[in-house]
Length: 483
Image (cartoon, rainbow, N blue to C red; front, side):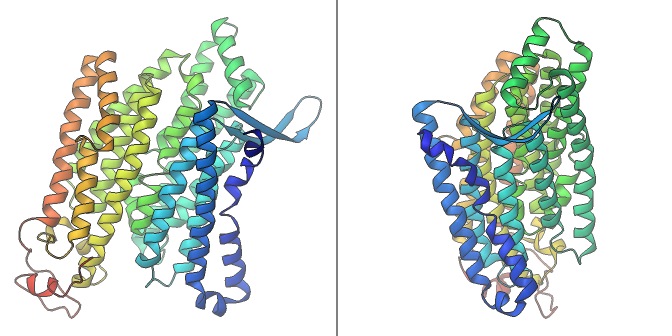
């Protein structure tokens, strides 16, 4: 076991050669690199598969031994300051590593065909591989400085991927909006890290948790300053996980390709804020005021996101607001102290929502055969309807994701959401009523999406490539290939 742990530092670096080699190839041998672009997609998936296998091995070791392992190297040392760089392995790290790699592999396989027609195919895989490296580095970090470095790298990758089609003004504006909004939270995170170092004299998690807890218990530090520092740390999570009021960037982020929405805006990047609160949970739980704030922000976000999802016509924006709402459930659980329920829902929601986003990508591609490349039409659920006959596999997959997210047994989200709802009832009946009502809204808006897209009849006045209007889409859709 010890032998395996000693080589865990390689996890974030396994996918890294792909973006480096693609970048060098495009710079020095552009024609040859473009001609071999499918090979680079295979290489990216292959390296990530190795990472997944290694992550699963570590996870199995964690289950068998229930141990925590930390390995550090000295970076800078002087009389007053010592900074160490390393990795930290515990159950949270194992869970997140497996989640990131498994979802990323499925999304990359899907992307090979989805992006095959796009001129930025290689650039897409380079960005995605670098994002996976950054996210894996984030979850294996051993101290707050490392977390902040990878936190910013994840934000940079998000900026590049949201603005992937940067020639479109709306996409360029969306990535800028995401970047600026996240800077607010990131600046708060940096101030919180510096404030905690000033109080405890350490960036390392183990030392930080122990010193901070002792200072609070023995009343040896200004409580208001500690509350301020932990609140600033939480501000970083609020922005990254699209919590109210810093949620405004998430729906606009849907301007990126759909596989990006599935990976970073449903399963991994937006989960970074939940991961940060979970990682720093020992700090937050010793200050009840911050726990109340976390729960309060969570309950506002889950209700606000669900009501916004009800009014959307764009299928990806509706799923984005749904993501915001479900992240609110996780934040509520953390604020109530239900650490296990929050992480459980993080996992179940990631797979369910990734499935729904990939299903929406199939729907959008089918609509694009009718209207050409026009997000205003191809993503508009009002213009869909009656697609069951032509996309049966997509319909089945989308229905499974819908039933899971709605919390129907025996699917995954039933068990995780049920734990959160049960904990909320024990914590506060008022919060429980809001959470239960929002669970009903979740079922309503998800089946609204499902029925608008797959059931009913074909809608009117949708244009095909030639621009010819049709009183019914039936004749056009008859030529759409089945899954």
